[in-house]
Length: 586
Image (cartoon, rainbow, N blue to C red; front, side):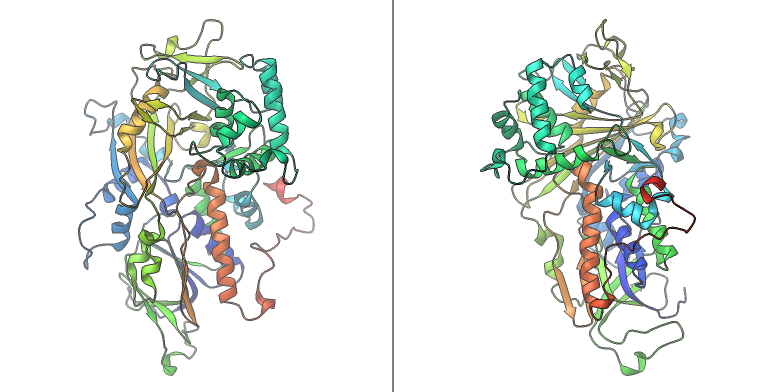
């Protein structure tokens, strides 16, 4: 493909959620943005994929990582093979688990399966950006309808009987809950009032900086272990049994205040897979503001050019040519390289950097003190989860089918279209397990056909060092999926229609800013989900990371304080006859 030489202010590699938010903000700020992705779809590691696309994604990243990069290899895919490991998928309900049922696959294009399953807090950075940027008009959302805890009736025998209990979502729910004593209700309300207060340096937190949140609840507020566990893992969404009290309380306060903004839940779920659809919305906004997109093209190299001959520094017909140090980007199928003053790269594209000073400091392996992973599972179910009626519990044993789950006095109800089931930490088969979350999405999320349910299983693994290998994701998560199946209308004998398990490596620190000269720089963007509360903090974390990079670019690419924007997003202008506020439009 013959292309004229063209120069951009910023080139961004990857169209994940952080990168897409950044591109839209920079384009709205008047910067000339080039946005590239080797995938032929938007979203990168945050994408929403059909079933066939997910299978292709898994196959491409299951290739051996020992192969050496050559002229035909993709450095991007080699990096992806290191970030997503131990990938395995199958079709358990099919006669041949390796081959899908044709009737099941005929609806494969209706699915929108997210590589970044997340809950969007009703108040926070991502909601602010969606409204201020106007991206909210491009997508839709539904509420997270219910949260439940799935716990063993006997902690010493977790392989036997389990119960599924809704977590109260309001003060009214607390007082209606017949499983709580009056004394426990008073203790719980006392804590919730403390958590929602604006008091600075409350005495309850004095000396508690290193105390685990679970211990803090039991010691300072005398809460029973069952209630403390529900608050820690189903309300504050702690991802580790040793999560500290202060950050957990800060999250909990934000969630409590977000509850009621758009309904009886502090969380929203994006339609069509969530994060991938939101990423596309920000890319669309960036394109409207003048950003250029190149998808599905292999990147051959990113070279730093320290000097530019005077003859090529003049203005050309296609626009401004680089006048100083810059980056030259060679793309497969393009006759001429494209150039940019600033490069923003995620870990997956660092392998293309050539002739860049301090490249080693940007490598992801040098940024981790230990090997940290999200253990992930995706399952498609053919029957809904059954919940007990309000204030009651649903129980199930290994022998029980879904039709018999629950008690005669409290018949189970069909689960709402979206729900979150949390498995608190237990000791199972001699191993101490971290909490596991199961986010269930039905057709109301527009991510699956009628009568189907997509389940996202997630737990955290923290390795002691970079050489520590994570557990087999299937062996770790399959027992939790089996427990969840006991509460479906199909019962314990039912099998998922599709499963996919994998481990996703996380970065434990932000990358440095590596300046290659006075006229050009490269910035490393951390696109991985956070280790703390990855399900509820992923979207806000992506927005915060985008804003961090945005201000670094603004400091680098502006001459004088008068050119620096006043905020991350320009103020939204309302039409003269339109009295509707931004929140009301949203």
